Length: 453
Image (cartoon, rainbow, N blue to C red; front, side, top):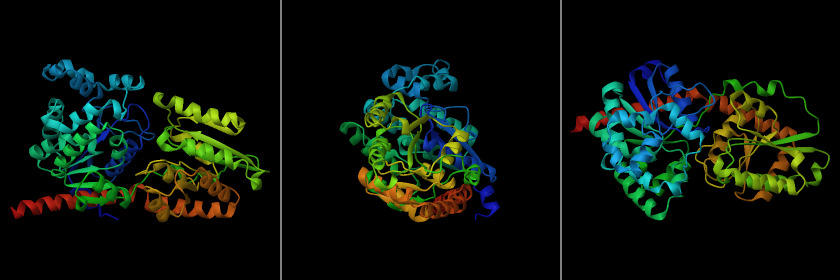
């Protein structure tokens, strides 16, 4: 545990997070939970939204002001003359209410459509967004005066060279899914981004990831300095999930329920779970059981056709009465949703760098079945709260689910181990301790560098 005076000595932490257009976003939620934990422990920390206001399922500690407002940066890219417009004309475009309204109308955020803008953002002060970079750095230098700056991802890191030049403080970047967006860029834009990220790497003091897998992967994929990487535990505020299993819901004794808790998108693998469920209900050993699938999560307009195709396929095989989509859930609804489950699976088809839903399920005493890739092997080894299946193999997923559903004692053992691990190792306390340790190390290295000069 970090000593209380270490929190106070770290100085002011400016944490730049990225809004996700009105949806619940794992990165936003992680950033908000971390800064909230730091503040509660006496750190002078400021959570600063970029693009759009953030949305969380717990108390939101972010600033009302938004930098690199999504409307502004988009218009500056499409209409270069706007960069010379007076601030009163452009400033209203960053109004939080306006950004929320536009986000609710599904502003397009696909990588394929935003290649030019991604390159523009990474060019920072040398590109069309130089006015936005100046606005941010002026505010940091004049009003915030941070001793450490943390960014939520590399895609907003075009401002880092200017922050380093003007503020001369450690700058850290949290990597938590950057590759998912980058891999969908057109090849021309991807090459430009890689070149720009290599340049920015020289100005970054450290990278933070939640797994050794992602540190190794991102250092290779983006040619980043591996020695700069720090591993910090992924964590959730688990207090309100701790007692869920103490009062289980009343349901038929033969009912077994599988849950899915994530946004409904191809990369999250709902289709894999649906195919596995269709196999599972035919399992001879489950013939006397009422097996259900409950799905919760945000469904964006761009994925409505995908989700409808998944549910249509289940209806075609006669499973509509056994499948329920409950929609997007808030904090209280999430707890009730988890309370109704016997096992959870989000079979991502990409190598997930985080997986907050795993910790949420385990905190509520729900074991998980996850693909054997990405951060999941490390998470399940550390928590002991679930089993792995062969990625993209719905038959293996169905078999692993059947084994757990048919063995109540095994489920209970996994659930207890997972619950204990989350509440002791993956809660906000250890996360805040590790963050302060990394920030302090970065400050000390910078001081030693200055002394050496």
